[in-house]
Length: 163
Image: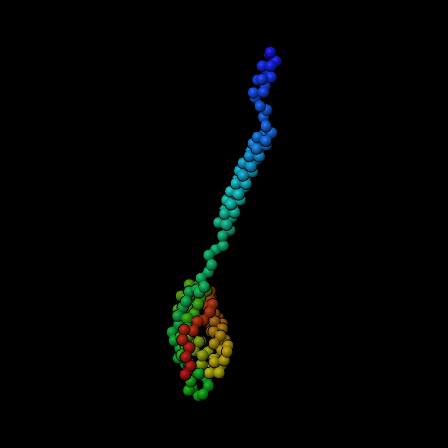
């Protein structure tokens, strides 16, 4: 009779199923993988965002630098015995704002040099396809020869009239 009671007791406690152990192991591994992936992702994101701040490129330079206006020029052109004249208003783009002070000191010299250049030009030279661009380049070259620090980057014509 004692054996029967022991057998009954054993039968009351069913054996642990293999499926429930598998589920617990799989769930544990899944949680471990998700925690590992989350930690890796957070560390990766934090390390790369720090590099972006450290190695950030400087802000881009403005498209147009400091402008220095120059008074209008009205000159006779070299052809047709002075019957044609040219009116030019221009602005000079300088490489550094400090160049403007230097340009102010040299203003009479610069104007004289530009006037000599303009009076030597003919109508045909200025009106062909690259005439104005060549004139811009010549003005930049001549004026930069007077400057000691910095320079003129570009010449912009705001008025250009030949009559």
